Image (cartoon, rainbow, N blue to C red; front, side, top):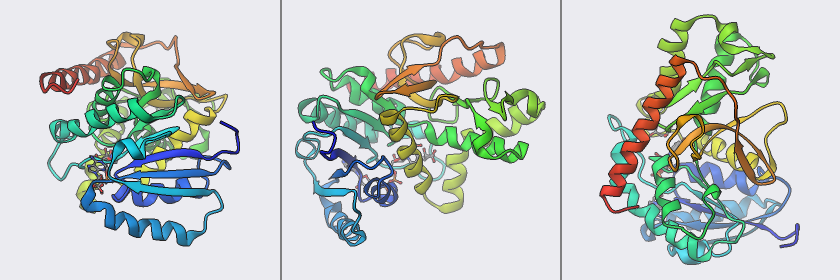
Length: 328
Ligand SMILES: NC(=O)c1ccc[n+]([C@@H]2O[C@H](COP(=O)([O-])OP(=O)(O)OC[C@H]3O[C@@H](n4cnc5c(N)ncnc54)[C@H](O)[C@@H]3O)[C@@H](O)[C@H]2O)c1
Ligand SMILES: O=C(O)C[C@H](O)C(=O)O
């Protein structure tokens, strides 16, 4: 493919809340100057609403938008996709955990994994935002045996960004001074936002904060339960911030992370840091040339070990549950 040809970006759930923010960012150049062709998948009853969103996209006259195709057939929409952002899924409501969505959303990712396997471009990268994101990514990956496993990831960048923001507020540092944040494990209440390897202005974040009680009783729960707090406040789940994190993750995956930093991505484990192989778990990663690699050699103390193990145990339970449902 020549560099000037449009990047074909497939987005599922395009008529939903996240879609309403995400599409306009993608179309206006958030992934770079290369024109994008949007390929938007929805369920049949939502196509009319999606037509309205496309009218709005047209009305923006974005120079970087090379075309838009919409439809309810995954095999047609994913055809030739270089990037697939799997957002479409039922969101949780008040009082639900993300794991409650496993059965409802599992079937979607089985079918979409199969369709991607059939028709996506050879260089496709697949980012899963729809919840429960890690296990949905596992389902899609397992149902797409011809696509290399490292092309699948699930979104923990929103948690990563939330953690940066909370640490910035605590220390008074600008977000640009905060580096090497890590989210480990599942995009769920068991996730482990790790300050022991993060830096504030080049200094170790846990030492700068020097307050284990804040770290345990405020920082970790605030980040891990932020999704629920937003649902409680807004009456519906995070949308613009989720779209923004989806863009951050895709941009860094395609174009590379900063030399002095790393990002959090949920990727298939190779057994690093004792995370069982094959689980899609969040790790600190660097990205370059469209590939990610897990940052190696970090020391994990007993506190962090316990937190990582708890979240990966939940991922193993989710894997068992979807296996029992015949989805993988
Ligand atoms: N990983 C994260 O950080 C994160 C953050 C926020 C939200 N989410 C999740 O993202 C998902 C979408 O959230 P939302 O607020 O946009 O929800 P929404 O209900 O507003 O939109 C979801 C859209 O998906 C569509 N859809 C359903 N089944 C589909 C299918 N088989 N194919 C294509 N489209 C389909 C629906 O018609 C709907 O338009 C939810 O699962 C939510 O929990 C994840
Ligand atoms: O919490 C949710 O259900 C939505 C999303 O995963 C979030 O973290 O905001």
